[in-house]
Amino acid sequence: MFNDRQGIGGAWVTIATPSYETIKDWKEKMIASHFSDPFRLNEIHDEAMGKVFEIAINRLKLGEPPCEYSWFITGSGGRFEQGPISDQDHGIVYVNSNLEDEHYFAELGKEISHGLNIVGYPYCQGNVMSSNPLWCKSMEKWKQQLFTWMDEATWETVRNLQIFYDARALQGNEFLVRELKDVFYDYEKTHPTLLKRLMENVMHIKNGIGPLGQIIVEEHGTNVGSINLKYTAFLPYVNAIRLLAIKEGIYETSTIDRMNSLVRMNGYSAVLRESRKHFLTLLKYRNSLYKAETYDDTHYLSVKSLSKEEKKEIKRILKDGKRLHQYVSNLIMH
Image 1 (cartoon, one colour):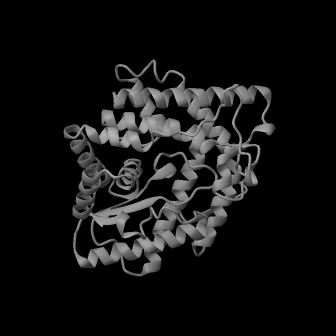
Image 2: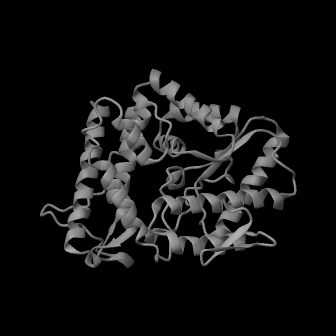
Image 3: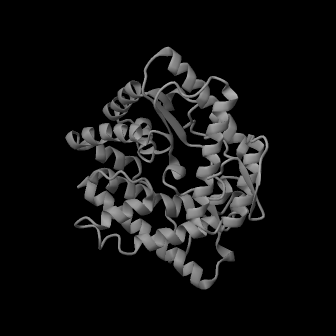
């Protein structure tokens, strides 16, 4: 782990006064050295964000957390699938439901979001952050909110459920997040229409291959000639596997771990035979974009820079993702 030390050129030096700025310097150096290794890259993100959490508590000067809690990350972080540049997606659940503890964790959530932004994790455009009261609540209020989201099942609340389902505890008691997911699973067992609503929310996927077998690239804007990997490749896999994981009550959060659990169940081995390999390859293509200047730029892969074999590989990935997404859609909706 980070342990108040900064990596420089593969060596470690002690940081006399850890700060958000020193964490940022360490993170950028480490990512530059490990961008091609998706597993190590996500370990680095975990270490950096964990250190931000610790510094946030010290900066608040409100003392240690007053009760059991879990600070969780979601989105690509929750799935252990962050690229070199990643934005914020996180929340807090805490045990006690009183004004004093509510104030403590609300202030902590604001400081965490502030610190992460300084370290190089841009504020979430969808406001999925601990600084947003929607994502920072006591256990009692979190359970009430989950029931509200599930009962309403609007486009927005269903989206929130999908975001929450990828939650992974980074600090505190991980079983608090699991307890909330149990609420989700118990409800889904007695309300089968919820799974259909979840599927309807992700039914549309962006087509990456044209009628003549060509890769469809961006025709306008700053990414002309590039394919948007997030919408054409990643989301078909991520959304499809998430829905299968919900259906089967799987607690793992990464797409790969969910696949591993699913292939051990009857009926999924043949369906997922090639998908795991394709998704791992996709992660490597995404991480090759480490020189991108902004979070959005990390999604665009220049097709003209690819070799003939790489283009074939991307096509296989796109076709398999679309096939998998269609399979899950047929399974859930019929």
